[in-house]
Amino acid sequence: MGDGRVTLYRSGMAGILIIEDDVHVRGAVARALAGRGHDVITEATGMAGLEASIASDVDVVILDLGLPDVDGAEVLKMIRAVREIPIIVATARDDEREVVKLLDSGADDYVIKPFSAELLEARIRAVLRRGDRTDDPVQYAAGGLTVDLNSREAVLDAQLLDLTRREFDLLAYLIERAGNVVSKRELLANIWRQPYGGADKTVDVHLSWLRRKLGESAKEPRYLHTVRGVGIKLTAPES
Image 1 (cartoon, one colour):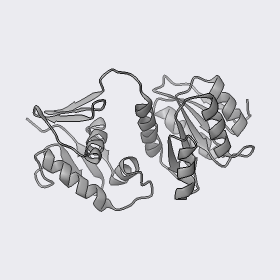
Image 2: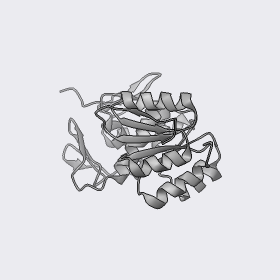
Image 3: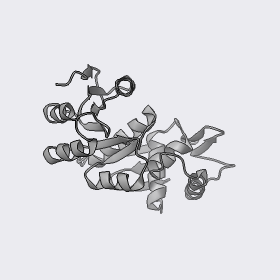
């Protein structure tokens, strides 16, 4: 395949193919994802990437649009024609119409350059979760709170919570990362699909609504704890 290929072998959580012509970006993203336990293959051209997507047993493709041989949008269509595999487009084209066109052409998600490894990995988890066809229950629990991702139900102290779609998505995202601080920027990017910010007030309002349904407030938290200047952390209440 292409000269730009680098294979990093780790006992992986997911097999990831990165198609990116910039050697520095390619290497940095590959190292970051491999360091998080993923198996990573990289290619520097569109055609080599297409071949790798067919020949390799990868779970996700990270596809740059500005490739030297074939436009990434065309590579997207060619991969989609031969494989049903999640594709995340990495683009510097911060244009809503362009993004909509890519999603309509078969992209499952997108990140706008420059992006962090944390954001990219969150998007990878999201597309894999959406594509998971297993019937096995996916549940998270913290104290008296249980969240079922398959049924999209949240139960608190044996009572089913009446959550809006956005409230459930927010709660699910936080409980999946229980014990870890999640920034408002990350929440905006992954829940509201606003990678370059947006209003923190959006997150604050939804957190306020969610806290009310969890029987708490910002001043008297039980599950959702604000880490000033950093973000939000979900933890089980102390006994």
